[in-house]
Image (cartoon, rainbow, N blue to C red):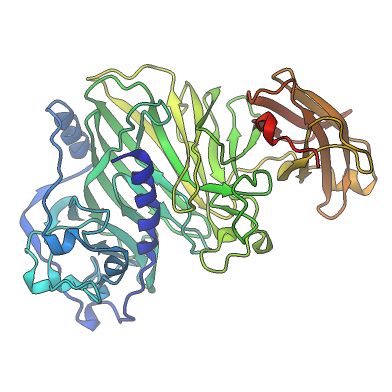
Length: 534
């Protein structure tokens, strides 16, 4: 499957994570259905899983595709969406815990079953698929006609107090998503990215088995283990998932490469950006902006904060931000104003930010950003991940630990002012005829000391650098009282008729030093035939 098809299917299918379920009383007093298991219990812990992953990596990779029954393999979108898991069959429905786990049916884009295990007191039992777990709705499927070993596509997690709305879901390859207090899914994460943006075939590793550990009665955390496999690598993962206003996932992973990997992506964040205030290349939709996230935030090992607005470029664009012991990075949805989206169906203003925080020093490497052209908001065209500098060789063990935070506001924020908006349009002086092409940038900063400085109309200096032989004109920085901050405006003039990328760097300062994070931008001038002066 081509990358575009794969990511589009992964993005659209996650809409199924929010399927409603019947309102049921859960617990032993409600007579919750008992799940059947397969085979005897086996001892299991993270060390066991790492040993299994290592052994798996030492054997030849075996694809796991299976032939589904034709009625299942031919399900269309609406048919698949009509299949509902019965909440009274949820894992832990009859136990004294705060959480439930419910399963996804195979079909549509999800044609390879994954194994599910119930883990209790260090003993794991595989969970048996049963047609009685599902209400097949208008799918056309008849449970009695389906094989008893069909299996599952993935799972989702719910609070016992709210079996209708899940707070995390694992579905498709090594993809998973989560929500904060807003309860709105958006971007997704992956277990691993391999050769993303290299120009050659991208590999999508699979989580092939999950172990769901029964939470203690008073625990606010769900622990999940996963076995990852692909032609290039096998891996063991442990997720400690704690829902809240900002949902936290503490992740440990051990990777065992089968072969050398050109570009290894740790903690991949996958998002969508079609159109926004800084990039209206796809501006035919009635909604002003369409994106899950609007920028990449970096907190470097040296302590610098960087903000890179996202774009929907005309060609694939790759950026690499070298660092040593990064403190964090993530794809953020800083713009949370409903009026800027006007979407009352999928609520882009409520999409969660995703922040990656390494647990231990990751050493030297780079945060890498891949932006892919898209015409369709169901295609996840943005990927950001950490790429270690050390080459990946077969036979070694690679250990990584990190925390993912999902919510409206990441746990780490700049103490200096941060960029709150980037707008672009045709440059030039009002009231004067344009003699040549230029492009206007209006960059707004708020936070830090800016509100106090703006109140005094204090002078703030924009420090602006531009590459590619371009020049800047009409540079200004003035108070913007509406946001308690400052707006920087300038025109960028390309050096010639080429469409070579032009890099721009900007921050604010005064006599005391830097006042803002660093704003980075990659601007691609349009072809000469499209440089209308109006």
